[in-house]
Amino acid sequence: MSIVYLDYQATTPIAPEVASAMRPWLDEKFANPHSSHRLGREAAAAIEVARDLVIRALGGPATAGKLHFTSGATEAANWALKGAAWRLPEGRRRIVALATEHACVLDSAGWLAGRGFELDILPVGRDGLVDLGLLADRIDERTGLVAAMLVNNEIGVVQPIAEIGRIGRDRGAMLFCDAVQGFGRVELPLEVCDMVAISAHKVHGPKAVGALWVRDGVALDPLLHGGGQEGGIRSGTLSPALCVGFGEAARLLVARAGEDHDYVERLWLMAMAELGAGWLLNGSTEQRYRGNLNIRHDGVDSARLISELRSIAFSSGSACASGSGRPSHVLSALGLSVREARSSIRLGFGRYTSEEDLLGALGMIDEAARRQLTYAA
Image 1: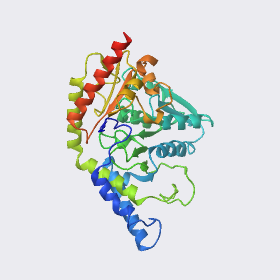
Image 2: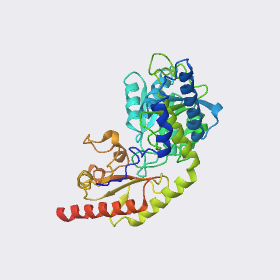
Image 3: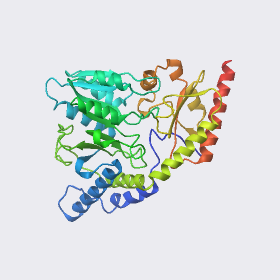
């Protein structure tokens, strides 16, 4: 059975070019990149080429900071928050985070709160955006660290990172930005960021590799201890295949930036025109990444919808929280009721989504939703 894949926020199809670039490093070029012999040095050199490609896709000058490869964005976020927090001076051990941050950020911040740090979770509006006036009021001289996501993984809303970063910097606070969903797709104001987490598998690269970009002058305590293979502060043997795959995915992001943007915009406009009556958009209409369509229909059970439509891969929210039975913390932060949250679905599409597949899937989703409503009447 052919399945239409509409879950791009959970993961993306690996690009053919990425798979091809990785293959030699899985086969004959298998050496440990931290070994000093010729094969090891070749692997290390390939990793450095990949590192430069990822930095280029971030959009910042290579001299502004360092990029450390990690096992993924979850590790990067944990390392950024915990590593930076332990270096904060007494009197600045206050952390401010948005209520719609990814679980790895909120849970890391909560872990720090249990160890003596002060944590302030800022609400967002019905559109999913933070109020900058409120943010300015809550970031004070005690605040050492601010966490704000570029593009929300559940609703696609784009936060005003440039303004958030400037407000924090004016008060002496560092900014950590989870840029996983926006990397290479939405402009990242790297100049106001102190730490940035990204992931390969959200941009048509392999799973199990991500990166943490750290501005020069920002000191982090290690999260993983051992050989210190990455910059002396991140331990563990790097996979040349995964790093090369990430680098190739980043190269394609730059090379295809205009083409990918225009195609996603076209898919978004088609989807919005195709949606039947009664479907409502969750989050801001304008300030969002258009490859994320989070919608709800009153009276519809999203879990039942997903179970019924087995030829379509889509979700009701974050893959990380799938199966928990709890309503999405992001949708709750928008002010949606439990009933509204449970009637919401997330459709993610992009480079490899065909127009025909998207339109066909939307028709099937709308038809199944209306059958539910008919049976419930």
